[in-house]
Length: 101
View 1 (cartoon, one colour):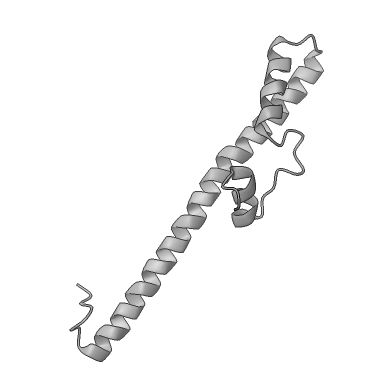
View 2: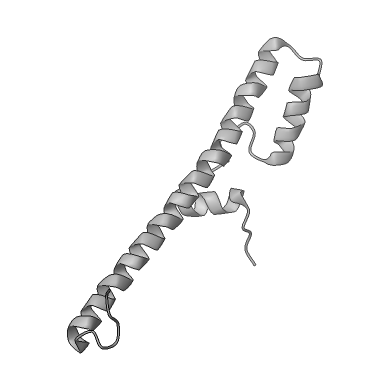
């Protein structure tokens, strides 16, 4: 059985991937956040972690929007095709089976 994780669904539907990100999964993101917030690190490293976290979270948020758009597109196309089919059936049967209104 496959996974419905965002990390699996996003690449399958949008060709976006987490592979090239410095932070590519939630556990690492949590650890890096803790390091930036409470760790004894330089301001430069803290800023790098901040940028990496923003990139990772942006991919998650933007990815969810992209998935929603993809699903909406499929739904719109499917409904449009069903409506076209109903119209063709209606033309053949004089709307006895599938009235369009």
